[in-house]
Length: 150
Image 1 (cartoon, one colour):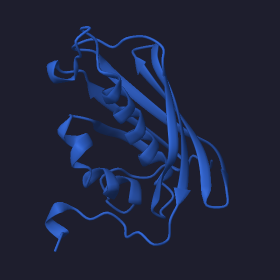
Image 2 (tube, one colour):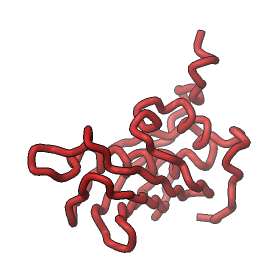
Image 3 (tube, one colour):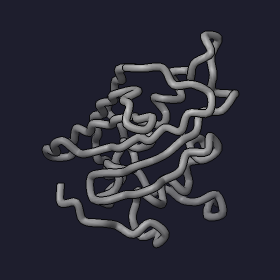
Image 4 (cartoon, one colour):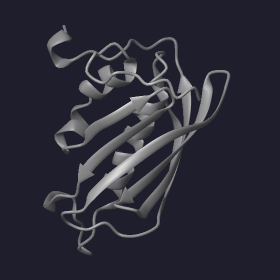
């Protein structure tokens, strides 16, 4: 991973354009804080609609946050890249009002495939660890914003 800083706000990189078109993540209040070549950092607050019957954040929301960070990191190089698979380990519960940060980092790439790790934190405490496997695809178009849809 080169660590080359990409400017958020330019819409020049695929990761930012993809996130701008990601209604699911943005409607949950997820924010893209930073993107660099092979990495990304996002933030999400746990809201009342994310809490399950045990009074903790539903794992699906934690997975979505981690998966979105993964998507931004693996799309930071330009070509459209999708998930080939992923898994998550829940380490500690998240609670209503928690501010979570997900940091994704490329571990390796080979051909059109890659492996990325995402750590979800509440402050300095690890909440979850996620591993995603990516695949660059040539037959998909780059994301478009809602205004650009035909």
